[in-house]
Amino acid sequence: MKKHLMILSILLTGLVFCFGCTAETAKTNTLSVDVVYPFSQEYSESFKNGIELAAKEINEQGGILNQTIAINYNDDGNNTNTAVEVATRIGENPGFPIVIGHRSTDDVLKVGSIYNQNNKLLFAPIIASSKLNLAENEGAYLCAPSDDTMASEMVNSMAAQGIRRIAVVHTAGNTYGKDYIQKVEEHAGEAGIEIVDAVSYLPNLDYFRYYLKKWDSLGAQAIVTACVGEDITALYGYLEKTGNTRPIFASYDIEIQPYIIPQSMKSLTQVTSYFNNTATAGPEAAFLQAYQQAYGKNPDLPAAQAYMNMHLAAAAANQAQSLDVAALKKVLGENSFDTVYGSLSFDKRLIDGIPVFQKIYVNDQLVPRDNLTGGGQSSE
Image (cartoon, rainbow, N blue to C red):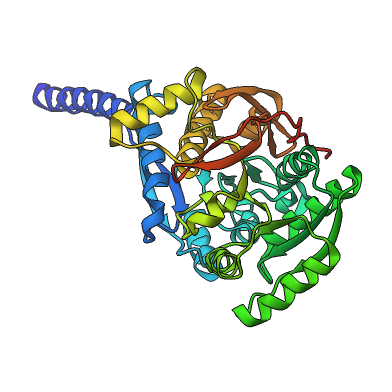
């Protein structure tokens, strides 16, 4: 009998130690955070660097809810069908409930409902679509200035430079370009700027010459572009070959990846942007220094957005002290957050407070120009 009692005592003691080990393991368990981007593309390197730098800092500061985070990189190939497959797979997996990604407006608008149905939130770091505030996109948060805010700055900048007649170009069938130009049209009407022509078709150089003749006859003083992808390269190539001398006002997509821009056209270009890559003080300057120390080069807009979104997701969970989606939504809706851009908050599901301004090319680098336009104020 004593022998049996001794064995039982040993077993109970072992169980106590085992439970202690389990509890300790739970405290130090790694929390997996899903990030989605076209990581197979060369231009994704800076975005990945921004995520990794933020993750390193978050872990040094105690992680998320005292758990070390590990990044699970998912490649959507910048393809909507693949994005849906990736979102479906992520939605079925446990882990951190905030997903960071994707790169394309169409992809984000397509997959937001998938994450929402699986009780996850999506932080969209690159797109500008204010459609994320619509009811059907519940669960998706726009963590960049909206197309409305960006168009406001662009139009105010044109007006301040005395431009009153413009031609606009965007990529056919692309939601981002179409919506951006619609916002330009709304703000242009308020500013007394006339859109004399709007095109979304860039078939070849000979056809493009007809556009130029039309723009000449209608007195277009500037060209506004919200083209994406290969259309950016094509448009700039056509403008160079036809000897364009009009100023070009480009949407921020032009600095999401390195496009081929002829030198003669760089001097005519102004890009609506929001990351101050020449900051010498404040949180942006601190980020610049940290990134330069980590990677030996300057960060770009995607790097800053990746860094900001990763820190924002961690801050929301730590402030909520929970991974429950309802608790996270409450925190996101009621609080402001210190970010690389300063203190930011959400207006419904659109980030509010990121300054928007124009950039120009100086020595092949896009840098902020003197911004005295008062633009970048959303009317929504």
